[in-house]
Length: 466
Image (tube, rainbow, N blue to C red; front, side):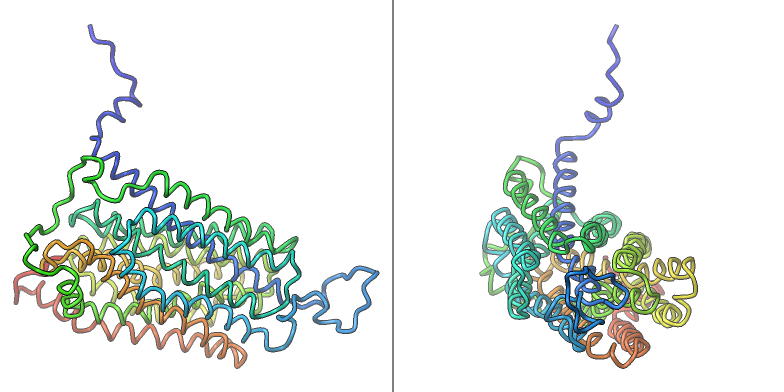
């Protein structure tokens, strides 16, 4: 009689070779983009270490102190304008990122994804580590930190269009929202890991808060070079069912670029993402400092607490994907979450500091409602639009559409933290009013698409796909 197979082997062999490759690609791209965010996050944790209230810090006996409040701060962030300087640092990164994103999609279409991604990750590791080396080299020039941030911003744009194009090559149109919702938690997982890793070293030697994440993303870059498979065809797997049409009769580049801008909804989703990202990134960069300032936690505790926003973000992204898969209404799902988010932000500012349980609960809720729509737009919508019928199966166009939507979003990501830096000296309340306004605008931009989706449900038109 046959000896029965070991249950683990049974499980392994029950999946086809295609499924295994798909799983590995999903896992690899997940890990790669996690490291991008992991190396982006430390700055927000280290901020509250670069400038803190030194009068509570016990100073070494051999130190002759003239200024009791700032002796322990890291120049040039020891002055009163430190918030503006932090805003400038964020913006060096984010403006470079926004500008780079519009070009990144075009390069991503021309260059082999594996080389593009791995070189981007290794360079990113170098620039992240250089910021931290400023601690060991005793660098106190704002220009140095700005330059490193800007260069890092440029090379970080390699990540998003490349991983999305790669996943787009491997996965078809089916239940994309859910898979993408789970996969898209890389952003939040990266932010959480980045915060925790930076938090370990922030009080002892903040340079390591940057150097360790820098090493991690560089190592991931080497793994990418060794293992990434761009297309199913490269390893004799079956490609997913996009809308395959012979497009040899079109000149692909001109055709793709002409169609990209007329694609229904690209403009609305791009602008909506601009405001959604404005809110998300303001939290990303200023939340630890807000918690440290308002609730008087030390840098490490504030950093650890701020990760709850991202934990909420993971749940929100997966929920948004599930709901939109089930209902077929991407815009409506986004809009609903944004509508609930506005009063939540207001509440968080009003009661968010009343004890630890309240803070935790509010952070989770705000994270879910702010990041849910943002996650849905960046992944599912980019991928749906990019593999749309009128692009005639041109999968290369996917990375252009992704870069356009994300590039527009990145403008919001740059403006948000900058405005927070300018507004926060007048009181944190005003920062929250700005965030609520952005939230409402994001909602309004989707109104035409929501109207269309609702009409579709009511049976006026043929129901829209995706």
